[in-house]
Each structure stands twice: as structure tokens, then as C-alpha cells.
Length: 237
Image 1: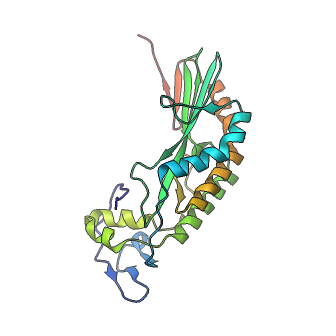
Image 2 (image 1 turned 90 degrees about the horizontal axis):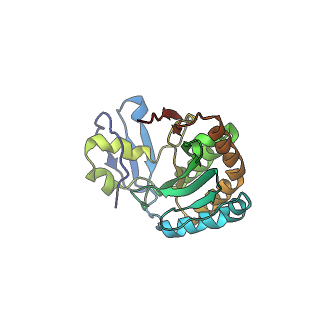
Image 3 (image 1 turned 90 degrees about the vertical axis):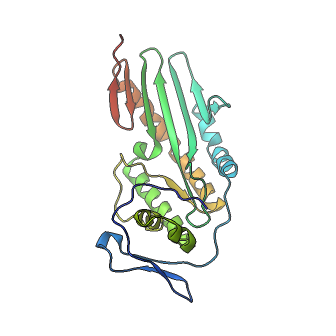
């Protein structure tokens, strides 16, 4: 099974696996590392990437088409809207580490809007383009998925270097503080039902995200690119 990594921190102390409910308990650690999770024993059924994308594309199709988007191709994945002045695309980017039978999967919705005549562009993920109420909905949906997970895999946990174990266990911790708009928050899913719910959510927010992206594009100076909230001015030679 694969592990979706990240930066580690202080080495955690040994984790013990108890009988019965198979409870993984971490004690004696720094407060931010204290963690207890119940492993229910049954791993998740794999949600394949092509199946998840099919569910998301099906959900957004009516709204995307109403906004002028058309399905892309092998060269331009996702959804594309083109005119003489502007080219807009969005697509579903699944975590490169794939779907794990214990921690599930996650994905992002990426948006790129280009003003061709002024050579200005923006690139953002959906989390950064949502309003506060929608962000709270994302956190709630993520936490529902996290609560449904079968729990950390003892085998995976013990196979990791100690510096990475706390990072792995963080995949099973609920989100307690609202991440800022600039945070790279993925959308978590554990089942096809979760993936379907995300498709419905994205479809419902697509018009407002599209309007905000187009509005941001119009505010940029010519030759400027806005990537993840950071503006870069291109200077011709």
C-alpha cells in the first residue's frame, strides 16, 4: 500500500496495537501529536481514479455546459471554454499517491483562466476560490469522510520511518481549525458515495467560482500571472 507523504516532525514514540478493537494509542507525546484512533479492521474498497473522475464529470456536466465549457481531450484534460479573448479550463487532479485502502483518497479542482489579448492569467485551486460558507461545507464533508475511515494501518505505520509516522497519523485526524484560503486543502473521499457527493458540491459552486475567476482575471495588469494568490509580472526582453 502506498503512503501519501509530507514533511515529518519530531520522532514519535512507539505505537502499540492492542487486542479487541485494535486500538492504536499514542501517549506521552507533545500535545499536538497526541492521537488515538480505532481500527475497525475492514479496509476500504478501492475507488479507481477513472471511476471517480467519471462521477465528477457526470455531476458537473450540465452546469459546465451552461457556462460554455466543453469536454477537453488528451492534450487539454478536463473542461475547456474558448473565445477570441479568453481561454478557461478546469480539471480534477487526483492525489499522485492514489487511493489507499485505509486513508482513502483526495483530489483538487484546478482552474486556469487566460486573457489571450493581454497575456494575463490566473491559476488557482477551488478551495482558494470558495466563499467562507462553502469552505465550512468542505471542512464538514472532509471530517465526515475522516470519521468513516477504518483507521490507520498498523502495517503501514510500522513500515514508515519514525519521522513520518506522525504525518501518516495526521491523515486520520479531523480538521479542527479552518484552514486559510491559501492552504492547499484537498477534498477527501473514501467511497463512491463520497465521490458523488463531491461532484454535486462542485457543480453547485461552479457558477460562483467561474464568476470569481473571470473577475480576478480582469483585475490583472497585462503580462501578469496570478498563481495560488501570488502575482508574477512578466517583463519582455
